[in-house]
Length: 537
Image (cartoon, rainbow, N blue to C red; front, top):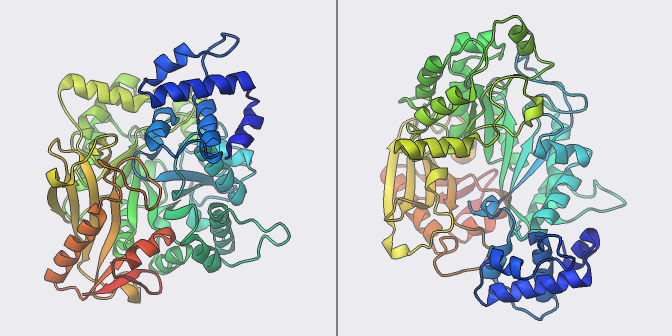
């Protein structure tokens, strides 16, 4: 969003913008943010000039040509900088209500909302405010992120709303195309169906806001071989699935409608298609205990098992208007206390392998919805404090990201972590700092049977499922000293993956490239086939 738009929206006075300029000049001279804000308060003395006003003034100075772009200055005033420290900017959108095939006893259903989503959850609330229109959600979210100082050229699109695979294919395709229109900033007024999805994707390859990842969520029993090609047609690169438990008895008690074996089969099939896999796991389900949850968590990482790339730990929360609530009223269900839950997660977090990223530890459900049990939405931070007190650590990807740490490429060490999920050999290739911080990684999959996916692109192929270089997200083509992104680490990781695949006897190397990363891989010798970028070995 441009500076003038924000001035109008926030109704900044000239005096406020003058103070904002004084703060920015102090920051450019080397001052820290809080002292500069205190030295230049609001003209009426009622508080300090907020960050979003500083960002608006910064853009005004840059757009007027009075200042050159200054990433270091922008970094000081960027709101919630951790949003893009992982290297990409996530934009979350919500689908409209559609009947869910699941009958889970813990799942709420609000009027107008997709199953399991509540209207006061931040991401869901934005969907409702935009009437679940995909273009409006994407377009407005990008503007909002840009306005508070975040780069928006590399967008990971996260489509939520329950079981996306259960929606009609016509709706799926329309929804994704309109999301691409939002990233392309292309919204023909007279004919919103002006172009097809492939045309919108082709437009995005060189767009200002490129899609570098497209995520959907679904159920394990809805993943079939024939769906893989459809997912790739849509541009999907990552799939979230609600596993919830790996104990068939617990799954049955909670009426999940699928088995642990179906979850295992779905993860193996998705991995064979090159997709990144995010599983949701729920402690404190009906029938579970802290001891059974600890045992259940170990099943994730066993040889030949699920081994997800990313994990969301969503403790079961007791909400009204659910069947679980009635069981609680009858005294048959007892939510864990906050202390019990904290100790459980602090225990299991130490066992997470280095190849997995724990994305979340609790959902953003406002405490007013929770009847009994944990109401702390900052549980992750409390778990980290508890682990620090114990002297234990988590080695998951998120806990080892370099974030703001400066990187010296010559001091990085290459590692090849090999593990064996169902029906594949996985190589987690990484560059790590001397302090064991993660600068970049690549997920290479060596399928035991390259025909499982049913996709001709992947026959005789090893698969690069993800390449990710960490640090504050930079604009495409931008380079800065000490920043891992755009320092050549990605190319070096791809070269090493190619060597491993060749030595293992694979004839081709395939990449499940997002639409906005096609040009990147094309520059490294890969050619677009039906659904994947391919390089002959």
